[in-house]
Image (cartoon, rainbow, N blue to C red; front, side, top):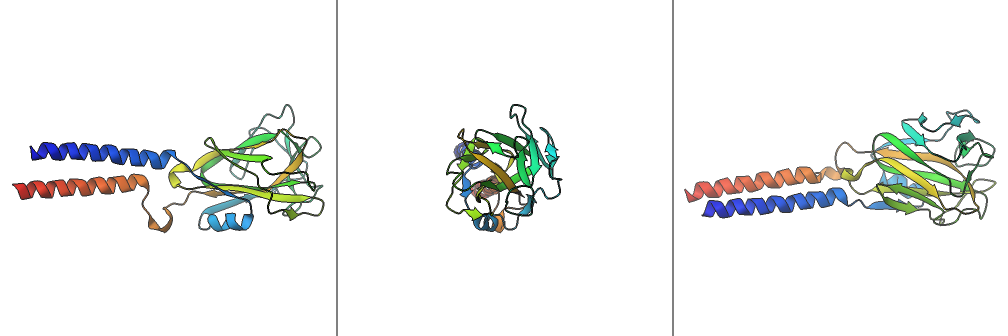
Length: 234
């Protein structure tokens, strides 16, 4: 009878642990950033890559499906194509990402980025003329969850201003392989530069076990306790 009760207990415990694990993996919390310094602090220790477009010739087209530094760009802008430009101010170097429609993105434009490996974070600068970009004009979406642009920390680029938008997922289990950028359908013009993404850490920060490992450890402990109690009862 005691064995039957113990087996029932183990089954209930396994169900509970499974639900805990599922909760960890299914609920992603996106940490939003509106300045690069805080974003860089959050991704410290990760494998970081920045696309600043300086390695691409100004005037070059980035066609739908083209890849740069392991990132594939996909979009449908009604015949308009992404293009690297250099005629306006930007946050680093001279080149930035625009389109072949006057070198600028228009309100309502957007694109997807796919990564060759799982990522924990992505951030970038949105650049426009003075008083052209407003809060919530730009949105980044990962796995159905989104963060929107804040305009609290403008950076002057000479002929306009730039705003940082970034996100970091809270858990390795929620690392992503694609992200969507969208813009509000208003009369706005903007460019993009310094797209930074950070790859998944090889180990959880501070040596904390991942949820799946934690479940296995707890299961092993429960089985050990059960066997010890069984031996004692004998």
